[in-house]
Amino acid sequence: MAQHPEYSLETLAVRAGQERSQFNEHSEALYLTSSFVFRTAAQAAARFSGEEEGNVYSRFTNPTVACFQDRLAALEGAEACIATASGMSAILALVMALCSAGDHVVASTGLFGATQQLLGTIMPRFGIETTFVAQTDVSAWRAALRPQTRLFFLETPSNPLTEIADIAALVDVARSRGVLVAVDNCFCTPILQRPLDLGADLAVHSATKFLDGQGRVLGGAVAGPKRLTDEVFKFLRTAGPALSPFNAWILLKGLETLQIRLEAQSANALQLALWLEKHPKVKRVYYPGLPSHPQFELAGRQQKSGGAVVSFEICGSRAEAWKVVDSCRLLSITANLGDTKTTLTHPASTTHGRITPEQRAAAGITEGLLRIAVGLEAVVDLQNDLESGLSSI
Ligand SMILES: *Cc1c(COP(=O)(O)O)cnc(C)c1O
Image (tube, rainbow, N blue to C red):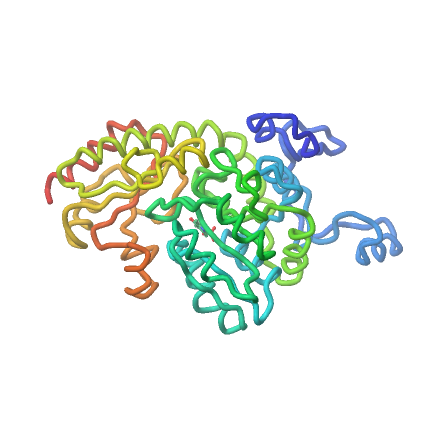
């Protein structure tokens, strides 16, 4: 199936990557095993040396993980995909595999908090420096280029302000200098946006979010051409953050409903964003599906819809924001997103609480900002829940 790009996304999401075992099971088999048995000593030697293809140990490969990798590769339109234990280990593996001491990275200021920490404070200890620039300012990316620049790393829409990077324009800048472009495609997933179609080299995922879709497991992935994912694999099999077969199996089941979930959750998000925009206690709404979004047109070109994450600034600061959060009875106070259950976060004190106030200010994360990752509940119930808090500030 992974070799059949003529199938549409809906079909690939349900079927790509599956190879049935001798039992001819209908649903994907879960191979919950840490190692694999060889027929002979000679076969063991051939498998270890790579002379013979096949499974050896689940830190390297596992059939359930392979099925997830092939299915996600098919959805991203990528030649190959490597799965990891979490989204952060996907980003770590990508940087460790493709960059060396002395290399330079350009990344957006609005990246996920842990990605900023990784690139901004951990990687410099190993000689890999990152310059952070505004997601939306293509000329700033060009100006940040150095002879040592190896990678552009972006995340679009950004979390939580939903800033849109012009992927094709940044690819143009990078191409002229032989720089790789990696896109964290967590918010859109390949259902709404395919970075490789726009020229990016790699799509990166926190599978923990929409790919799972029901808040059950951690996982991550890097999809792209085999020559690059092979490098990621080489790092991963040695360093160890492999995806568990059980999590891969959960994620496979998540992919099967990805399209209908994202369509329904995006429609709910748009409805909620329109309601918030008219609310007297709301100063500003950040949602790429609203005509008031500064990059509404670009988002319309690059994404199939605005996605399921809406952020908004209330009339007030931290105390008022926390009051809104604490008044909610239905929305879950949790940092996760991409769940069928709607979640509510105060980024300044949670997901972005560990970066410096200066980094927070540069990323536009104010004390009155709230982020909602919209799920599958009825929008009217979400509105009523938010209204109780908003009307009390
Ligand atoms: C959650 C998230 C990550 C990290 O993923 P984990 O699975 O939590 O390690 C990376 N990027 C974005 C955009 C995320 O939302």
